[in-house]
Length: 198
Image (cartoon, rainbow, N blue to C red; front, side, top):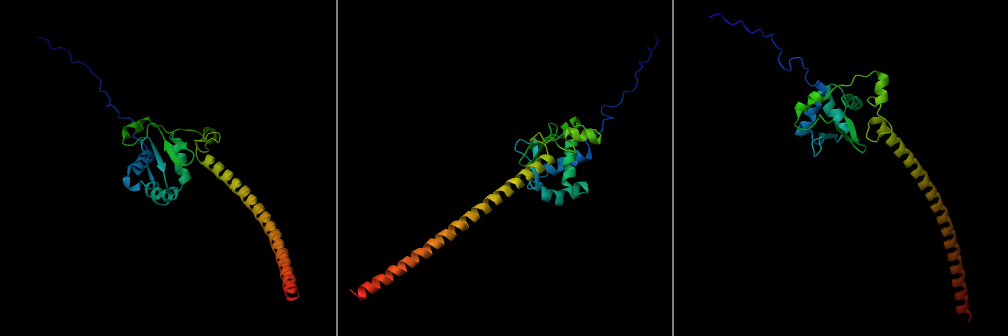
C-alpha cells in the first residue's frame, strides 16, 4: 500500500511573538497607581477608570525619582499626553485613558504612543495642551493661576480703597466726638456756674 505523501505545512510563528509589550512608562505608572501604599499621593478614583495625583509635590519628591529617575512633574504629564491620556478635571490632576483602568493590565496593548514632531505636538496639545479645552493640562492650569492672580490683585486694590474710605470715615467720627466732648464740657461748666450762682 503506497504511503500517502506528507502534508506540507510551513511553520507558523507563535501568536504574539512579535508584539511589543507595554512600555515601561505605562507599567511604572500603573504600579504607582495600583500600590495601596501610595494612595495618599496617587490613586484610582472610585470607578477605577481614572487616577488622581492628590499631592503633586510629594509625587515629584518621592515617587518620580523612585520610578523614573527624575522629579519633573511636567515631564510626567507630557508623557501621559503622549500616550493619549486626558486631564478630565480642571480643578485637580485627574487623568483617564480608556485602556488604562484598575486591575486591567491586558488593556495596555490598546495604548499607542503618539509620534509627532515638535510642531504637531504643540498643535495637538501634547506638549502644550489646548487652551480652549478646560480638560487639558498644564497651560490650562497656568492660565487659571494667572486669572486667580489677577483677581487677587483686584481684590487687594478694592480692600485698600475700602481701608482708605474707612480711615477717612474714622477721622470724621473722631472729629465729631471731639466736638461733642467740647460741647459737653461747656454744658457742664455752664451748669456748675448756674448751680453755684442761682
